[in-house]
Image (cartoon, rainbow, N blue to C red; front, side):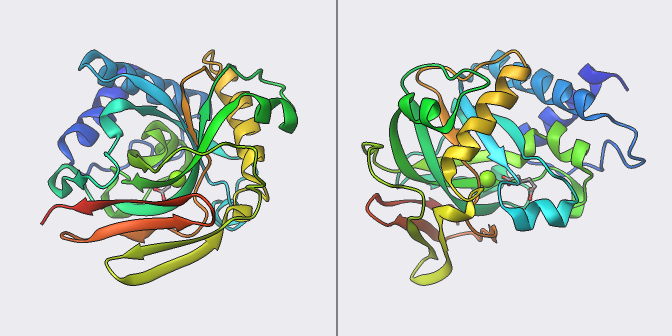
Length: 254
Ligand code: 0L1
Ligand code: MG
């Protein structure tokens, strides 16, 4: 199968909330091919009327990198059809086996150069907010190679963002708790995101520009999971509370 056929395959699985077998069971796909599939699959979403909204970063914690045997982060493309309204409802039937993780979101007020320093990246940030990312690998049993998961848009499938705040606070080590209904399910810190979430933003600028899509004003960047992801169940209310930034969350349909 060529790049466009494989893009149609991962896109229809995501669109229909249906599991598929790995597209690269023998490990023959290059990372360049995997990102080309991801890009072509995003074009199919855009052709259905979605709008590009930004970038998500993945494998931003050391533990996840070591687990996958990789030494760089991966990234995916965000679009408007993935956005869940703050306090809104996620339609469980649209997903395969969704999980959720707490993240920090950046809103950009100007583009960021691929070789930006941490301070230059910070100067491009309009606002920061607490966020949750819903990740839903389209592969059966969550079994995938690194190129598989990259082709599948780094498992991006949904995100919710809370109130935006001035980025002029120290957000390098903000405590956070993720809850499901009244049960506190994960405790963490933004420091788990590459030691400082700004490092993830700098990496997003580098990787996105290398694909010919420099980070733009108005885009959101999800900096990566600050704790392990947790399975989502029907009927739950999932929320995150972040020190100084408040809370956001969503209901899961019954
Ligand atoms: O960290 C991430 O958001 C990437 C997730 C991709 C792998 C998975 O589905 O667990
Ligand atoms: Mg994530």
